[in-house]
Length: 112
Length: 112
Image 1 (cartoon, rainbow over the protein chains, first blue to last red):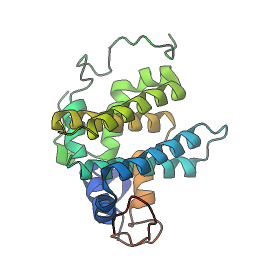
Image 2 (image 1 turned 135 degrees about the vertical axis):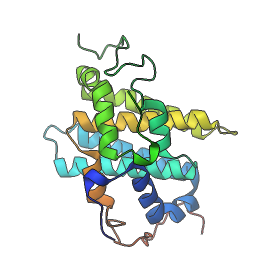
Image 3 (image 1 turned 45 degrees about the horizontal axis):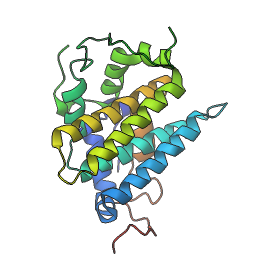
Image 4 (image 1 turned 180 degrees about the horizontal axis):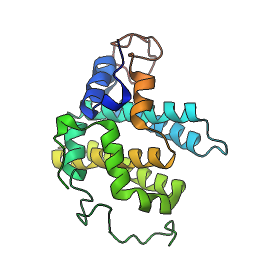
C-alpha cells in the first residue's frame, strides 16, 4: 500500500482508507465498543499534550489515532466526515458567519 | 467564503480553514481550555450516537464539531494532521502492515 503525500490527503480519502483497513473489525466490535476505543485514544492525546516537553513523534501518533477512530465512528454511523465538515464550517463560523469568527466568548479560559 | 465541494476537501485544507476562522481565539483560550471544549464536543457526539432514532443532521453537526476541535488542537500543538495521518496509517495497519488489518483483538466487545 503506497501512502498518498500528506498535502494530497483528502478527508474522504482518509475515511475510506480507515474503512478499508479497519471497517470489518470495527463493525464487528459495534458502535459502543468502538466509542470506548475512541475515548481511550482521546485520553492518550490528553496525556501526550500535557507533557512538559512534548514528544512530537508521540503527538503525531496520538492525533492520527484520534482522527482514525473518529473516521471509523463516522463510517459505522454512515456519516461522510467531509460532507459534515463542509456543511458546518465551509462558509466560516456557523454562528456569526464571519471568518475569522467574531462571536463573543465568555469563558474563564479566554485571556483578553 | 465559498465552501469547497466535500469530495475536494483536503485534511490540510480543513485544518487551515479552522485555523483561519478560530486560530486567534483558540490560541487565546490556550491548550488546556481548548481541550475542554473538544472534550465537551466528544460528549455531544456520544449523546448524538446513542439516540434510539439517530438524527442525521445532528450527527453531521457533532462529527463536524469534533473534527474541527481536533484540527484546532493540532494547530495549537503545531501538528499537521495530514502528515500525522499519512505517517501512521498511509501504509495500512501500523501494527500488522496489512490492509484490511489482521491483528488479533481480544476484547469483550468483539463478536466472533
